[in-house]
Image (tube, rainbow, N blue to C red; front, side, top):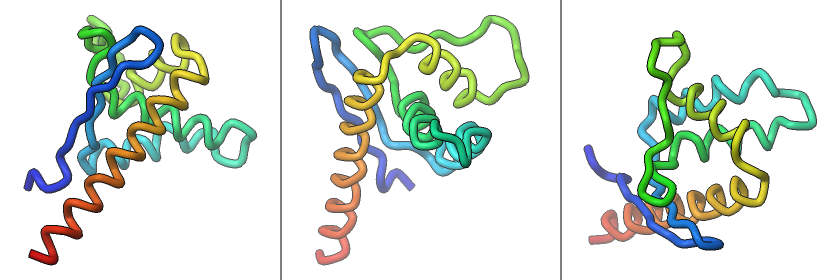
Length: 116
């Protein structure tokens, strides 16, 4: 049940990021959160931002903040709002790029396990 669970730590421009692969619920939430931008010029950015929000564990050892009160929004949506309001495009692009590399690594490991 942990097949596909990987994380990555990387340094970029003086900051340390920890990311991880997503569970199915988070993948579905990414789709829901980014769906309001479907058909707009920001569609791909919304998907990328939502994915980054879901996969990001810490920045410089600090987890992303959560609201003190229940807003009714999912965790992915809360994190999406934080990322889109506070992070700039180059950082989102870099984190997303590393997430894609991590996903490719998962695929490679699963393929290798199937050959064993």
